[in-house]
Image (cartoon, rainbow, N blue to C red):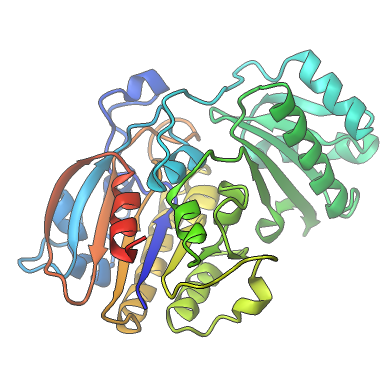
Length: 391
């Protein structure tokens, strides 16, 4: 039984790409390096052993003479710096046309259609904003009007926030599904609709990560479809199911934190997941091959966007504590890939994603470590997985 495991440390970029200014980013952005500097070094002995410190000079992450993994840097081909673009390219789909963004807020015709078809009565905000800030700003008005808070960012996202003690979670999800349908029908080219549920906890609005859902455009075709069509399993952990709009997935489970995602990934590697409980209907498994695909979002959502470099560093350290257990429970025919999808440097000005190279570590127990150098395209991962699984 051949397996591939992909772990995406969301937004852990490693240096500005040459075209970063086209994406309104500074050449000084380098998420991993700057987080290391801010924290006076990181304690990541397991990824250090794999060769993470050999990629660049990172404070506190040593270079090793005999890395256990192949290590390198990947340069994105697609025109973007967001979750969908990065993950799709990892799965073999390069996006030559950038998704639409709305720096002035969404056009009236789109908002009017959304209000009419959801019957929500009206909306608040309609501007680019930090989610935590805009919810805090408009929470009181949201409670008076019961209107959803609709906002965007520098990314191609249509975000809808509600207090789920006021508006039921099921209603929020329906509103998101309606928004996704409108955006697709009218060809607005928006990457994701994101449900942003929150509650009032200790007198303050707090987002509920476990109930967040992403409603992505449906990708045309990826390596996930190839694996599924071959009768093999594709297990999505975290928001993978949402990023690919269920396309090419056979089993999926959402997570409320990195810790939960890491625990589930470890259980998947140990063959301890109850796959029957998380299986899609009408799948036909005839092949022993398997892809475990995990997104670890806390680095991005909780720390990158909130300019919390200390929290970001602790999140990377937490991920590292699981790497050894995952490796120890891998079989000889298992391949582990650890990478990222873009940057979100918490030490530079702004709260948006950053256009960065990403690190990559590729490990198999029988394979020698070494330097992969600079790889052109995240689709290197799709090719590697396809070859490994012999799909």
